[in-house]
Image (cartoon, rainbow, N blue to C red; front, side, top):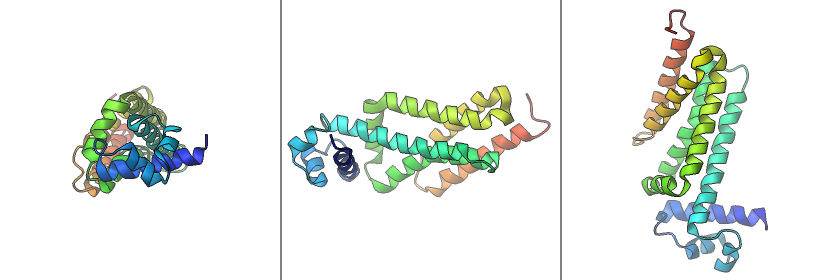
Length: 187
C-alpha cells in the first residue's frame, strides 16, 4: 500500500474532522476531500474511527519528535529546554483549537478512541522531561516532570487567549527550575 495515499487520507481526515467534527464527518467526506473513491479509502483505513486513531498516532508522533529535538538540544538553558519539550504538547492542543471550532469534540473523542495513545504519549513526554531534569533534580526528576506535565495539561483547559497558557507554562518551568538550582532549595 502507498504511504503517500495513506498520508493523503489522513490529511483529508484532519481537514474533515476539524471542519465538521468527528460525529458529522462521513467516510464519503474523507474520500471526496482526499480525491479518492470510498472503496480506495477503505483499502487504507477500516472506518472513520480507524482514520481518527491513525491521525492521532501521526499527530502524537510529530509532537514527540519535536519534544525529542528540544530535549536533545545542547547549549540551551535548562528552563528553555524544558519549556520547549512541554510546549510541543501545548502547541498541539493550541493548533487544534486554532484550526477547529470542534476542538472540544475532537479532544473528547480522542479520549474515547485513543486513550491508550494519549497515555503512551503522556508517559513518553514525562520520560523526556525526566531525562532533561536528571542532572538538576537528581532523584526528584520524575516527580518534578510529573508536576510539569500536569501543569501543561491543566493549562490546556482555557485556551481563549493562546498566549496566556504559553506564558504560564514558561513561568511555571522557570519557577520550578529556579527552585531546583537555588542553593537553599528543600530536598
